[in-house]
Image (cartoon, rainbow, N blue to C red; front, side, top):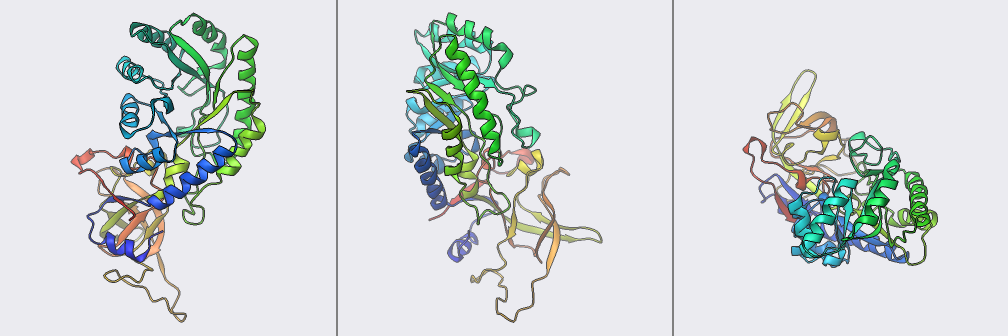
Length: 399
């Protein structure tokens, strides 16, 4: 991932920072768009994954829409240049202020998550003399087979309208004269690597689409969400997921009616592998039972490992590269096999949970070594905080 020129450039940049490989991002976007266009699928980018301006500009230029979960995300999408007809506003707790801002922009659709929200949105749209397009997010009770903290499609989750509420929901939609009911929306979770889960989702979508059809509703949009996972263990070998395999499942198992559009909301699968958090070793603490690498990056820069025990590959990128100014490793054929040391890789934050990985095998590391925490392009920079009055994290881009 890191060529010698890039590593030499890192030496003059203050750490920690996020490094974005924009060439890889462009390749990923092209692969996704090519596979989606084959089936005339519509892809919206889930902005919550990464809203770095340079990243958003490339996604906009690739022709994708924007899936937003806050009023500020809606506003940012419009400012970056996503057309209003490609902006969708989801979220279980939209405030009146956020709804009004989105109404003023005439966005493509609101993904509504409760019967009460139908009434609120109808009243707010009426007050502005507008008719808002809505899709209702339905909880299909499909297990995403992923970490319980990023599962969203079970009845125990807060998201969406439950299936036993559909009759009341249909009645509310019929009475909402300021809303245009255009479709149904689903999102069952994140980091899904078993594609069979999406087959189960398709079965549910077909059932619920038919349920509405039998009651006189003609739905234009089937929004199946996102959730496609990436390989955190092999970021270079599998840098781009198989979008073809993913979209083929929906083409085969969704019973699309004539004129229906199939919409997706992909985030992680598009941006995760293009980003790495780059940090330096501040101190090395060698103990009787534990060795610690203390970095200048912590949970304030990357929360995922602490929030839901997420794995990220950790590399000492001052090792193994013949770059002037960076410690070199003997790469001759007669070199002895490199000895690896196990470290707990931790940050400087005053919390015991501030740990990126335990017993991580790395070359013997020293103060000043550069450490890369890989596959950090999704839910990394966007979740950074100022806890401990930390300075904000910067970004560096491939040239």
